Length: 195
Ligand code: MD3
Ligand code: FE
Image (cartoon, rainbow, N blue to C red; front, side):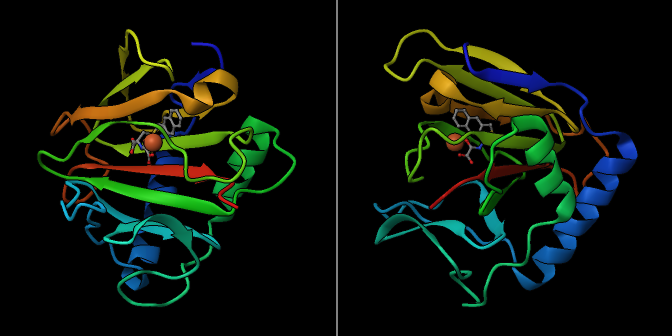
């Protein structure tokens, strides 16, 4: 798909370990929580955020906000390694102002959707996968055939141009496929320009 850029194995094993440690340290103060859809259905994915803004979902809808919805505290800062990865791989002139952290454990998945809550759909989204391999699905914005690919620990992808509004989701995560995350599972980081 045009605008889908994929860098398998972009992060070395030691870079993955270091980045995961930074994310888990941040999650001590900004714990993973389970959002609910505006309709009141809990997500199977748990979430937290890093940087000035975090994406949240609750009965009032989807939005970006500067504070953690459970603790009320500002989100922890975004690790410099992530800001550098964004600069080096996307070349986008402004830094990311949001990093959504998704944690997949057990049967967690994410249904097909589009990312539409950001102000500038021209800005890219950069995704970093850590831990167990995900079966990722992506298809055209307007509907039509989707294709499936695996996102493994250390893989990075950028969604730019037409791919930025693609429909995408996570069908499932392959338990035990990586030993990176202490209790197993997968953590995905998406860097964005939210506002
Ligand atoms: C394609 N996350 O947080 S990352 C999301 O693995 C999200 O947690 C998935 O979809 C995850 O919104 C997929 C890869 C990704 C991220 C953003 C995209 C693919 C995308 C935006 C547009 C098109
Ligand atoms: Fe998405």
